[in-house]
Image (cartoon, rainbow, N blue to C red):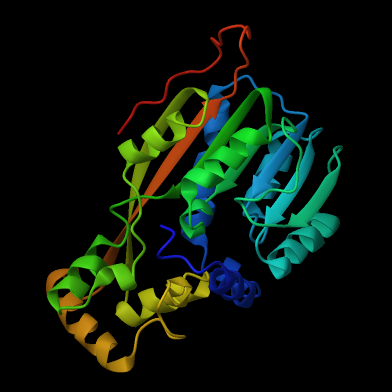
Length: 289
């Protein structure tokens, strides 16, 4: 992933999307809700929580609502996203715990080892150049007995767009991120000195009036191809969009002419157990899909 992601462009893209992000992020909210629902299968009662890649704060709010007495730290690469989350919290999210925020890189968290009981992240990992380094940081700041919980997009995400680009002889690796599959994600998590790593997946099929509507939504949530190394400022040029539209409509449209796009959400969780720590029996296994 290191060769694909430009961190500075990611920061600028998401900072520029702050004001309109929520109007395009219905899928992100649904995945966030499903991710926090994974916590219903555990007995964890965290006193301190870290949300990495807080964005505009939707997932942070879900965590605050579930654990009303916990101290919550919201972190993001984008300062404008962090400020938005903080302002929303101050106006709308009263709870008994403390709230703090920080602007930081997910692979260089400004926290001491063994700080948090729950380290969570919703759909941020795909924008990190080295996901394995992010997992190691999550594990580093996790306290004994704590839980790592995160989501990211999987390999089948935007498969129709990848196939369309390949058909018109465009290298899709320069336009669509190389997302992991569920097995490789689980393997990477298992290499970070954690206990009982579990992964599962969901498939979503969304429909749009045309490919421009899909591109606008991707841009609206900051997912601009400008974040990929070597690309310029725009997501796609007009001539390329016309070619994409022609092929996409022919092969990936419903009977009413609406195109469809696949998104795969991967979920992962794991515990941190020190040597001598009692074996856990409070997790209901989640079936691997």
